[in-house]
Amino acid sequence: MTTSEKYVTAAYCVVFGIVLLYVVLIAFKLQRLERDVDELEEKKNGG
Amino acid sequence: MRRISLPVLAVASLVLVTTALALVFFVVPDDADQGFSQRIFYFHVSIAFTSYLCFGAGAWKALLHLWRRDPRADLESYVAVHQGVIFGALVLLTGSIWAKISWGHWWVWSEDQLVLFLVLFLFYAAYFMLRFSVDPGPQRANLSAVYALFGVVLVPVSFLAIRLSHRLIHPEVFTRHGPNFGGWILAAYLVSQVAVIVLAYTLYRVELAGKRLDVRIRELRTA
Image 1 (spheres, rainbow over the protein chains, first blue to last red):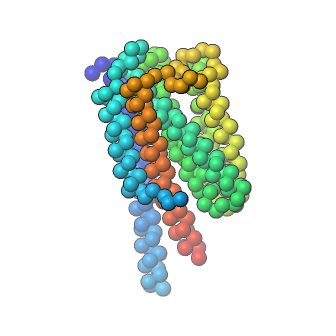
Image 2: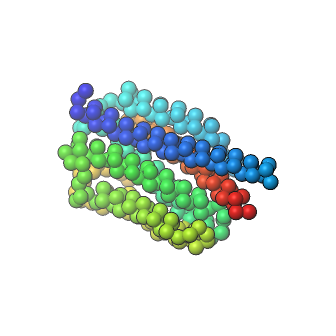
Image 3: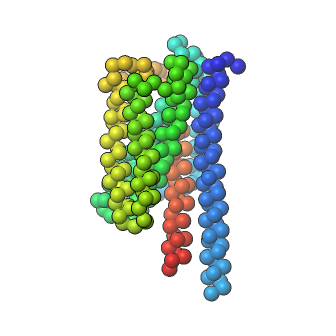
């Protein structure tokens, strides 16, 4: 692999990595929201 | 106007990004001047324009909030600015990598285009400090909207900086007579640009849906 190829690969990996990290963080947030909805549902059914 | 559904947007993003990458790595010829490293251009420039678009959208929604008191506009403005900052960080990172291979330096402080983009990025990064230093409510929404509107002035300054600069280390790819390239390079750039815009819009919609759900849950809890 030439130096140019290494840098280009690094640049595209940075883009892919940050977008992936963002999607993972959003997925965690949606999981938390799902738990919150379940909790509210339980409260509604219990009360 | 009927909104495009999220699964359709997600599939469109995947198809477009894959097509753009295939064009960039398997179809486009090596640049005569920069060789293989010029391939960073396709996503770097596309991401830069997308971040400008996100900041512009954030300012537009901020204006709608201040003008019509649209209750959804504040959250939409916030999410657009958030996307702009994420894409702005990507511009700085990919630009730095490209600068290292092309100019031999990670950063060149004497380049107006680079420094002005950094100023724009830092200005909008500070938006979150302002927003989260104020309690949720109309005051926070108004302050955030005014700040987002002020920041958008930096977008044309950042875009035009390269034309105002006399150093010209940073290449000028769009002139008054159109782009400085054609053929497969132009085709790959256009596909990359559309792909990044669709990806950004998909992420915007996903984040906005999450934020709206979060707000509704908080309201139900306090009710």
